[in-house]
Image (tube, rainbow, N blue to C red):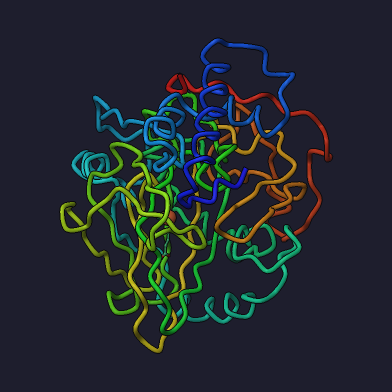
Length: 379
Ligand SMILES: O=C(O)CCC(=O)C(=O)O
Ligand SMILES: [Fe+2]
């Protein structure tokens, strides 16, 4: 469904409220879902009670556009994996991550290495992705062994392991081509990445109260405040905020007003040098300012999950309403970043394919995958 977040005429809103109330009742009464058409079934399955209620109580003027969740502070800040001393996070650093929602910058690559990599990344900008068949900055690690090797750098992976556990997958990566004189990326947050089509999450954590995913953001260029470095609102990973329909803020192509005031929140800019990285939870409200310079501000990110969190499950394609369209998933798979995948709840790309940039895939199209486990928090 494209919920295009604009304010609709009253009669449409009344009809939508009625329809939404029916679906909510259907969910609450646990009526059989297999008879529902696919789109409706996705909404009944994946929208939380709060998502229905927000739309109904505000007369379709406000919504949660990702699955609601409330962060539970862990009782221990001990690292979840043993690592070599040079990559070790102290309990104070781990606590800081859980308190503010982000950590870093840390060093990984040299400036010269990144300047050389930059040439390769810029050359790809308008090239079709071998995975998706159109020019998208997403998931280029499937065809760039160099990117894949950077993603596996121990400085990155060993730190993620201390926060998420020893067995880690990447389910997505992305280049950020922030060119000279380019606009800000507005404040945003995501929980299970349902924000992209308002229907199906990208990932299915069994408990949304935990931190079930990390974003690692690696600067290819220096990211200064003038070039539009990342900025974060400390502690806002505590909950997913609602949006108001209509407005100019939005995110990529969706225009809405985010329930967030940067003057009230504790916002910080995080300048980093080429080759440094930041680890954060996508649930922490973040964005980046405009690039007012004549230089690029290139970066790549990767989205890391523990092996027990399913990604996409048996979807054939994934749709991003605000960022580019349909991603056919027949050549997609999770990639093992560290440890072992004992759960095997997602399609996986063989490591050898990633080392060589090959495109053979383990699971033929159409082969059923295990159904996602229901989230405890998904009432
Ligand atoms: O590169 C940017 O400016 C934004 C990055 C971002 O939002 C992300 O990595 O999740
Ligand atoms: Fe983001």
